Length: 426
Image 1 (tube, one colour):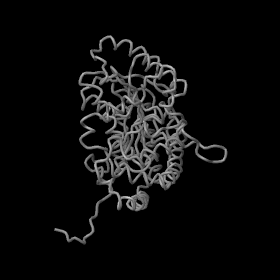
Image 2 (cartoon, rainbow, N blue to C red):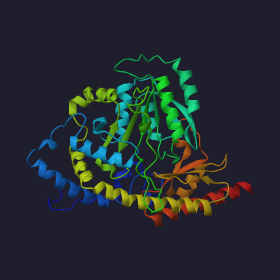
Image 3 (cartoon, rainbow, N blue to C red):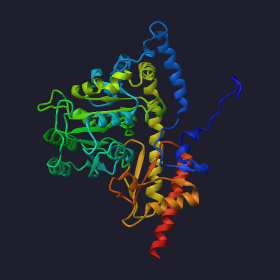
């Protein structure tokens, strides 16, 4: 047994050891995780000291907390989102969650039952559709996308077709017969953004068919475009901004599911849902919520102070610079050093670059080669597809590693790809 004063040491890679992502020193470009987490220590220390001065007198932060979350957190978060989004976010529209995954699972499990249908983009965040299909027993229906995001015309036709076979009885407790899960801003894995025209069209289709649209909005503030003065611009408008209570025909069809995992720290397990009143009421009146109160009362209170002190804003500016530099470096290598016939979009934000090889090329074989020869890995595109499509595509994350490690790994992938393509043409 170690002594009470003995320092407890943990290797940083232990966080992913269960998945063997860092096996034998592997450079894993598949991991969608943030960098420079060391800075979070000083942020949390300063924010904790700030909030504890209040808690020494009140102690409310150590209680279960209100079901929709700490008031200070919701107020400060609303101000933060209003500054970064292109519309006003009211604090009353927010509910605290334990991260975007918990928020998604909660919404899907509260509103839908095993055997119900859920529509998803193809490709999309692979764990998202796995939650629906494997954990909740929902039937996933894929909708294709293009450079402007999800194909809303195709979605309209699919909804019309599948609504005929739906057995869901819409009630006050189950106000929608199905849901659409999508990542409209800086999409995972493609990095694309849903165009404003598509946003408007999608809201109209959602109202027409009475569906819930759940937006995975975890990347929205990670925008890398700059104005003429060199300042980062605000991101594209969130889909939620096109579904406002003041709209003619408003029914509350859009939910925004956000998180601090990408912009601060995933270890905080802290996020939020921005939703219309009827969805917030269903959440807060559920036994799941009633039993424990706020889903993360203590941490949300600390982050309220971090937001109030401007610490999150400062951190966001730093990681925008780092990720922007990383993204541009990776894109430059792919465009200039990878073999001809390979294409990739330069995203305007987010965590990922999506690379497309000619049809017939196997990124699964490329992945095996890169692991064997260079101990470098990435995600094959087919993992992001409910139908197993996009085997000729791959996704790399540019956020986790320092720029030298990152660019070395990307060059090695390109070298292996070139050898594979040359071998297939001889």
